[in-house]
Length: 181
Image (cartoon, rainbow, N blue to C red; front, top):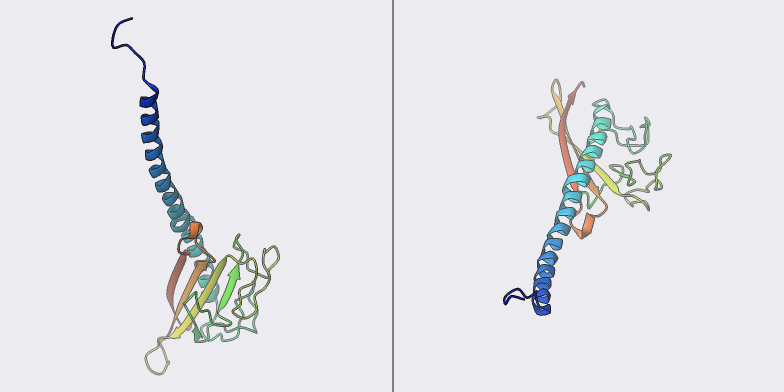
């Protein structure tokens, strides 16, 4: 046997393994952050935007002067709600009664057939909800509304909680609705 052709010692293998484990622990922490960010800012944020758009389309389908349709149910009923009456809140942490609804994890309206949650009572979230939608209607018409009337509608949608303990995903949409449309 030639000198210098000896194998690696157990100590060298232990040092190399220790370095590898230390590097992998750092990479795994970064992978966890990447997964959490992708879920919250990718998947959940896209879903909240989609559900905010659904609510906005439902509100925009109402007549400008509608102050009684209930859009908290689907299909909307002609009475029992606020329609496009001025009021509400765009703050998902403090919803206003009659200007909030809840969806289950699959996007089904709570209280509807197939939803995994019961119908809400006032602003108290029902058990099993995952998405919360709140909306606010503001009259932005200058002075007395005669020929050009405008209402600003803002819809905010948020998840019940963020993935991995991070901040919950929230989306906001704002549009103007004019009379007579």
